[in-house]
Length: 290
Image 1 (cartoon, rainbow, N blue to C red):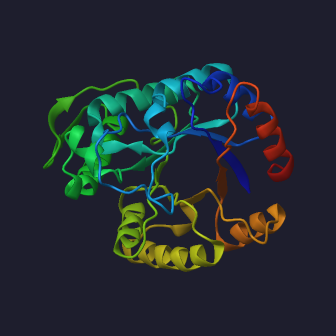
Image 2: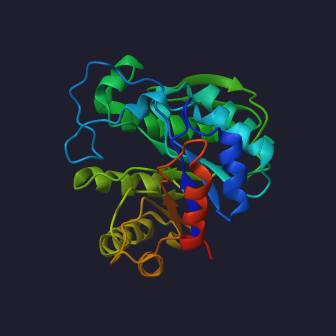
């Protein structure tokens, strides 16, 4: 089982380079950064990751993930570097494709493109995104970006993205392009949509906090969808953000997720202060990294 870490790096936490260098030295497989370009002051949307719906202030202080990951790439050589997740429809797809290809080139092919479309309607509105159509936009953006990454002269004619034949370099080091992981969890119809998107445009699925027993059920659906679409289910990578502990036991938790079909677990260290992060990472590595 691969074990990675996702850090909420801000202007008051430990810096990205120091954190990434330490994570790599401890044997962590991947380092992820999240994204929120802005957080509207006035909002009605409830924060989905807390019972009371209250959003932590720290979400408004995230650094830009691509600049942070470029910093991490400069001081590491092995650890993979990913977005957890990038809010795709809030970007220009041509500029985003160029940024990612450059980051993948500079990191020696270590970039993982974890994507989402956003849960905060007020943020989407500020960023010029039709919230109800954010996933159709995302699907089309990803297809346009893949064309830019893989073709010497790429053109695209869609509903949300249109451009004539252009040259866009550099191309990503990883071929045909960095893996695209669909980082959507939700439930019901929204989860079904995430699974369909994984089959349609993804190289893997990366939900948040799905228990092992539920993951077995969801992956059975995903395998069936792959068969119907002619995709090889075994080629998909399953990543779990914030794995649910099993009886408080790390080894049991890893074994349960491995049996369920997960390939990578992503931990969220909470203590990121300059004088705290090192002990936090060392404690996590001792418990989770073989």
